[in-house]
Picture 1 (cartoon, rainbow, N blue to C red):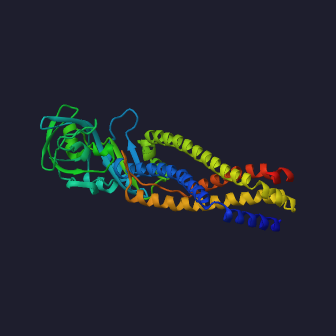
Picture 2: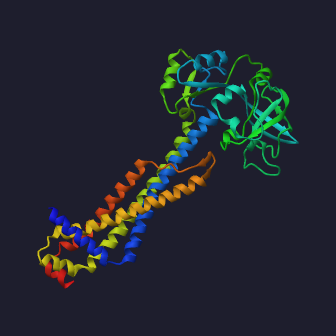
Picture 3: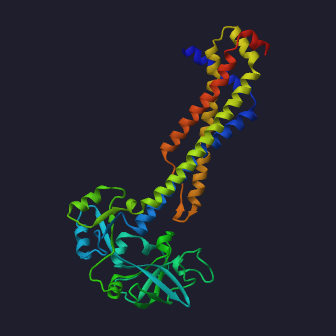
Length: 399
């Protein structure tokens, strides 16, 4: 058995040495590009999911969201609820928000968007919005006449926002009028402008809960309470909060934003499945053609090898070993190419509406791509070798 493998390896190596180096290099390069294609799109899908999850945790929802009970608009005794939740091990912070649809007016322009009332210090313990100020500064607990807004809502002078709410050029220190849903109109000084690259956050604005409660006539009430956990991705925190007798609705950030993400991922997965199928078909065709041409050109040599007593299976194995060599070198070259592409896109990420996307290459995706590439290549190389090697000796020698 081992002697047969050594003979197959010897024949394969000699065939590679005496074959066209240009064809060999081109085949290896095609395999490498196919490998990159198999790994690249899944890594982008993983990157999109990772970016969206990070944006959701850092700017939108924290790790968990506590919402009012069914049939009620606000959470009552929000401060007391926050203190109860913060006593749970593994909870690092909570932030209550009052949400209201408002219309913003500035120099004859208006934009309708969401206005949040927050306790600034609590918000800092849960989200990272305060770290992304591009102008001015974030709110303080005592502010009553100040507002901070996203860069999309603030806008740029003379530029449309593509259908998104924009005041087209408001800056720090400017005054903006805000019309509340109850008819109240207040004027606020823009204290700061932030940019998170999360479009739902960058189109919103924030004032203090003290100010918004006074306008809406609320007393220690909140629309939602954001919860920050010590470790991301642990569903146990939701169960633990409910076990403390919390009657309000508790959702994870995935449940809160899952519909949009699931639809996007399903679309990406369909594209990825089509791309993978096409790539593997190309690999089969390329390997089949290369081995078929190789065996046809060496029919006489194959006939002579059989005539001197070389077993048919040894000859077939020699071509399978050639395929394994080409695929191995191609996969290694593909790993190097993919590393280069990943490095470049890490330095210059793709711009998506939810934020910059970095490719997240998973080991499972690489192993799956290598396995599928080897499987289709071996099959594509075995078939033409088997067809030629099974010919009778005289037909093969005649060519």
